[in-house]
Image (cartoon, rainbow, N blue to C red; front, side):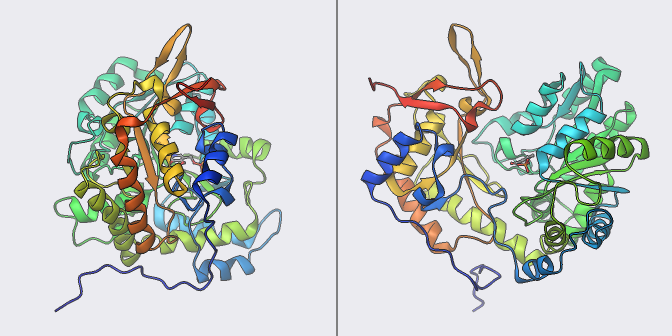
Length: 460
Ligand SMILES: Cc1ncc(COP(=O)(O)O)c(C=O)c1O
């Protein structure tokens, strides 16, 4: 009989010890961190699922490429190697490296003149929204209704609502700075957009004469879902699918810290010469010379290899299966989840887990604190602390969903780590009715989730 288990398609050559802590130490750490897991130190954390961004393991081929990275200021060969790989994968004319995704976003929305205009997306990721708003624009999310319903099993919950997109395009006209598809849709549960939806969104943008962009941080995972789930796509490779997706767009931003399989890096790729010229001018001002864009030559070299490795079917099959493995275990335990499993993370519906907590009592961060206290597991809230707004003299304007994301660093943890993680979640779920909630003590006005200081409700 054929063995059906999906194995990690790598073996481990270098190990890093995991910090193991006592409950008393974790209590102390959490208090010191003002009950905001972002403020914990790595030595206080046993399994870190805060993010899949820049936290993965590089391959032997990537490390080897780093050794020969070219650190020339202008004209680095590592840039030309990256440019070749990125062009062949994406078909884009202009390849502009940035130090990470958000700098690509800042430059893109600056050159698209977002001020006093709107950006229409399935869902803007938080840095994307913040950049649009910082530049004086309005970020409008138009994900399909199923994308906002954690229980819905729609296979492409990252799709944009085409009717609402068309209505906005027709109403706003030239005020639309861009149509943007985030693939996969991180803030909506790591859910993919279908090829059909991407084609239709691109077509609408073109019909109304507006540029069509991708936030391609997880383009390879999105391509794998299309390969697995979309009728007629099973015989195409993830790379072929990704190539078609890129061909629909006028350009894209990419945090290469995800599907670039590197610890730092980003890309802004464009087809339009004038936009690219303006982008490069801003790049020189804020990031660096166009052949390094805020990165070391060795980082460019590792990214060139990562972009090739990430579309390998064996890797993507393992990647998506390992996330689904935890999802299925938690589902069997009746943990309220976003369905189906996302590409890079499992999302727990904290509002459903803690129905006694109001959004401004931060059910998501409460769950993160519980997971940390139970087993030194760090997760991240994607809810009212991240997306809610302080409203003068009233409770926060809540986020649409109160989610906790357990994000899987790439090629980093093994199946036994995941089994152990399921035990931690089960302990936390068993004591769900006693969770108390948190209040905000101190916050900043931009991206407050990263630095806010909190305290347990009911403490002095
Ligand atoms: C969908 C998406 N877009 C943009 C970003 C921002 O990228 P970076 O963290 O590299 O600045 C992220 C990062 O988490 C993301 O998930």
